[in-house]
Image (cartoon, rainbow, N blue to C red; front, top):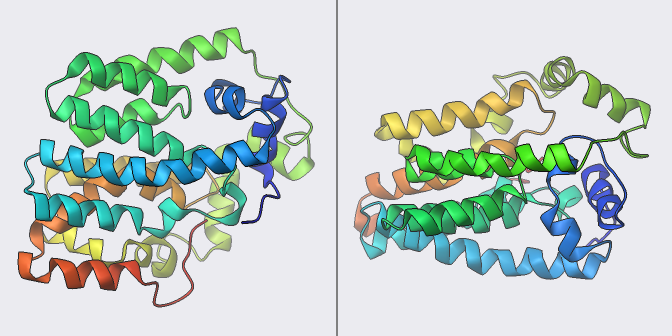
Length: 276
């Protein structure tokens, strides 16, 4: 595994040294506090997150009313998404996968009528990624998880953001100062919003979810893609947020006798996977 850090990973390592970093990295304090600037610790957390995510997705899907076959297929669909795998720049020093792993268990607790446990886990997830409470609220389809937004709000007050040495690089500084403008420019460089290989194809077999577009599914997808208005990354953003809902919706509409084949087809990337 390539342990050389990308720009985001470099900022997590700086935070792990106890030095201030720019917003929003300043509120993502838990993993830098635990893993510090030791890549091997980050690698352990990244590897451990996979079974936690898969198991949590299964338990969550059951709590949302799925039988064991559908729940197992949904978990398999989710962990096979290229955006969940992520680009080299966030493997293993990144927060997306660990945040998903904790957030899915928070959603599972809420789905199984354990609100206190669910909110507490959502707070933990929010110290990894400030988006986690929104993720949990969408996955469990309940506003209770939004209580956990207090965690990044408090962290932003306690851990004052400062422009770090990575963010100070001119290109990254412009992204930091002008997120909307740089996001739009980046989309245009990637072929625009109608670039199917970037905007649609990474969903693979889970596109079957569109056969039954429930309000739950549409809300999750809308929020997931809305991130692209203020961020230069793409697939990993919309799939880490909407992935569980899309995966479960797809597993629910694919006939049971086709689920195993669908998982196999979905798990194999038929062309180089887009993960950025």
